[in-house]
Image 1: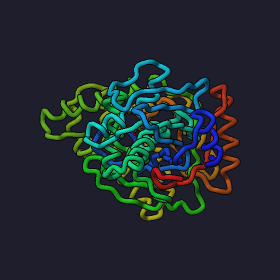
Image 2: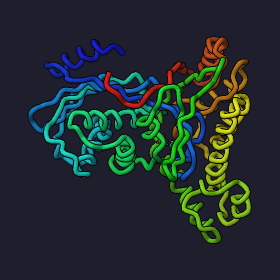
Image 3: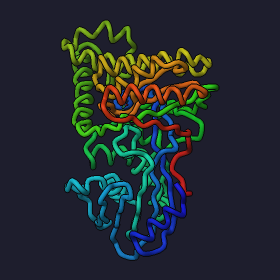
Length: 389
Ligand code: GAF
């Protein structure tokens, strides 16, 4: 989006000059889904679809927020000293901002005046590309800059996760905030979610590119189903610990899991746990394939990830399955899978550059015929984390 247009939007809403404009990316995840809160590995990257934030300081203690994306949006106002989450349905979107402010202040950082903030995303909300982490890290970095806060990016990432868990109520892992906050141009992040050790790996796809495919279906029930998956994995760990001594499923390899899985003694819980264990191991194999330049193998592992998310974790649904399964049949497609929490949202595909147009057309047509409305396709670049523009 154009900076001048953003400044003008701010001027129209707040009737004054803005001070700065920030951009915070969204994310995709190459592989390693629902492994983060299980202490496993992930391989995400920050993308050029994200959230712009235009802000100006105020000399009172008020924060005024405006979203240029939401139809009929109005300015939402709260005090920098207000620590309670918003509960009115038309204001809950502001909790991602408010949570960051509250937790920074609770951590002892001085935030002593209010500000106006206009946000404008080019990332559809609820598209599974992490608009929420994008907003949290936008807010964190903007506050860091405005108030000269002595805080590093990983600490902001952790406050983003705390906002999601404790202020918003989604018991998510740390992948999204880490991918957004620590994003690096042209690199994916190989992250061990149990230790937060990480490595940047250039995403070298040669003649291939990543196509993002959005189902255009909002995932309204995703929150409760997501939390249910987290609880199911915790219950599986409890049952395995009759004989083992683990904190998270990510500590297990497939053979050990296989030998002890009888302890779980429940069909659904076994499938949930099997996904978490296998997906983590699959991610490690995918990293090896990447390093060896074996893109075909990487593609097969990406397909296997979707299959496991479908049958064992049951977080795909008709829309995401239609996108992935149709993508698998297309010439020039090495692999495709859903990304993020699932149930709706988006999928990715690795597609030969010169076949990408035909790919989008064919998948789009089958999707429309099967689902009854259009999917959207995006080509995103892999970019740096939040920054001023
Ligand atoms: C959502 C969550 F926010 C992440 O923490 C992660 O668990 C992901 O779903 C599934 O891999 O995006």
